[in-house]
Image 1 (cartoon, rainbow, N blue to C red):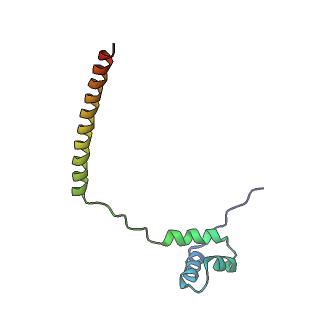
Image 2: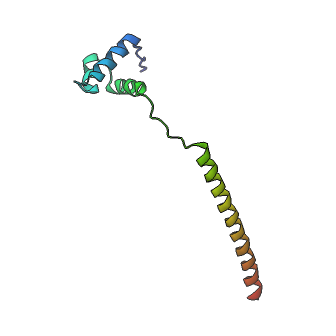
Image 3: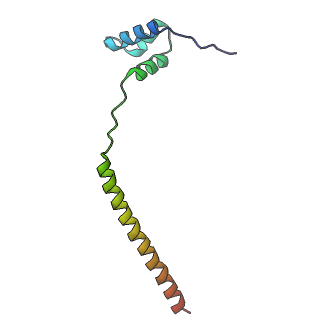
Length: 95
């Protein structure tokens, strides 16, 4: 059994959103009253909310972090080389 998607006019959506935004009834109550699935109305409400402002760091702090990570990477590469040499040294000494 295939169900067809119902199409709602822009005016219907706007009125449904207005009823929810008034705040005297829940979204589920408004959905029941209008004869639509509550999740459909919740999605409409979610889509109309402004997206949360992303707090992007300024480019300068990204450059500072990049320099820090490059220094840390260089230090870790040096430590790895020292450990390789130590492993070779101790492997030869144990023979």
